[in-house]
Image (cartoon, rainbow, N blue to C red):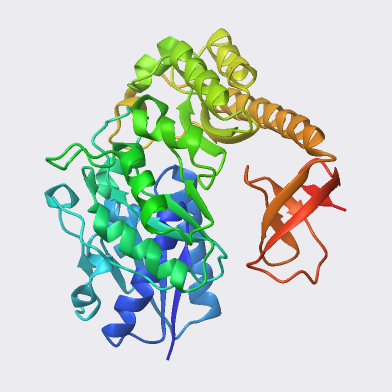
Length: 409
């Protein structure tokens, strides 16, 4: 009897999949495939549905349980699929009591959840770096985003619980930990005391001296606090790589998205951080073809890549999500959206190549993964010898690259 968990989407889902596996096992669940879904785009939901149909063809006798953000926001849609046995909400999936019941739909009001319960894990299956969930939900309501309706309002894990989880994972052999959540720079906003992400980072590094590397998942630059900037400047174990939630480079588009930063503020943040940490590398999320976006507006998003000195892009063709304000705005023609996404991806390939060029000849410390891949401090992929052991730190000289990955000498 087995429990297989198939994970879509973000690192937060990857972390929660480990909790799901443990809680479902504790409830005595067996011969079940759990599909932990993502709802960030319509394409993510489509892929989940496609995967569910494929699973049923491959394993006709297995029960299929759907959970995650898409299950939370579209419970009835998944429950109506003949392949699906149960639909479990985002909060319920983390509690063995809900895995022990047989109700078809176990999805409660996610907005009613007010606190984040500690749920420790021992490992992350298939990963050499561990994820620690420090926050969940989001208090902001960007006009394009469905995620708050899948995750609820922002709530944070107490700092002592975070430190205990990091210490536990380091004790289990992990040398690198990634702090993850929906809006991690919103960490601590629900606490009475003034404790934000920067203070948490400093506390982890102080209290877990054996942790070799600490990383942050995607951050909102406008929420970066003074302690976080100080840690970036002075804590070498905090890795020099930030993934920014930028979304656009035109001020009117940003306003219509209900983002809280301007183009100038994004550029200023990158310049400030680079002065504090000259080896910092930046990635970013950018949406192509947001409603009302003109060619000139798009050009400013394209230009933001160079203005911020980005090295990696995560490009999203705009996807209208039912129930969000952006879905009701005048839409850009789909062919135009796809073309702009293509142009952004080409720009991303160009800046990555430029970054890789600059790395040739450098000496880098990499954490090795499976299949002969390692990651530098800036999270750049390095091709190693195929038989390289995984989960170890190696010092390598960069000999070249193939346009996508560095190559070790």
